[in-house]
Length: 271
Image (tube, rainbow, N blue to C red; front, side, top):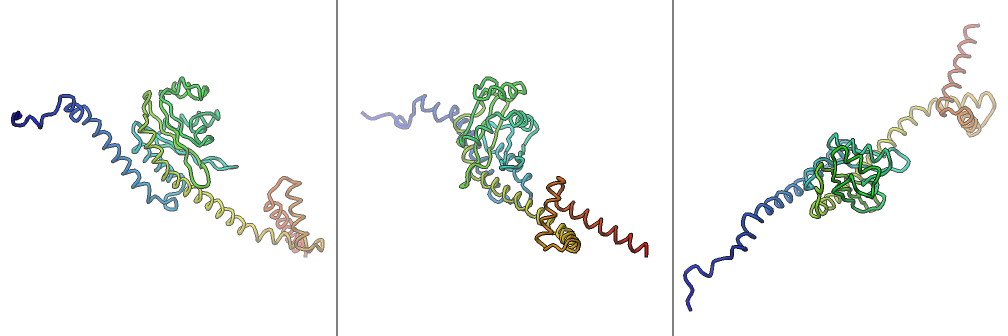
């Protein structure tokens, strides 16, 4: 039997709902999120620590994380360096308050993410049993959701990225996937910041060494003339004086040089 014209093109009301306004809005939202992520990754790739410095670089990465991750209202990044103070940055003031709490008490999602090397997510910090001291304090500040992602490099975990929201259950599985995707290039940026920070420290140390070396050499020469020591023996004497007096080597050397100069001036004034 022939069907009426157009009958074969009809769709059920359920199909119309599925492909119409109900899922259409969700699709627009997802497309927008994907666009935000793509834009953030595009902006992230050319960032150079050498141009802006490690702290500014990490702050820019934190701001891009807020743009890229659905539900995010603020983000922070931590660069963990052994035997040195951690570099911690934030995209918003409330992030700094929350991170100060967790680093102050040594407990929180960022610390767990970096230590365990896996993503931490919570939609109700106030009642989360994983962080019984941190969670209630964050909840009292009105921050209930967090997504903490470790920043991995071939050399290991360098730190973590924390993303916060005030609402409960702000981050879903999709947000977690986006956060972990964003964390890959973010970790490279953190590595660049670490390398720059180490280079800056080395440059400062070298500059200090260059400035102090002439004074130390003068002090060694004075000790050699007094005691007939070799250069190594005179240097060992300086080091012992530094250790016993709990003073820096440069300070000990400067005192010896200034004392010798004062004595020379006194002798000239008597002649």
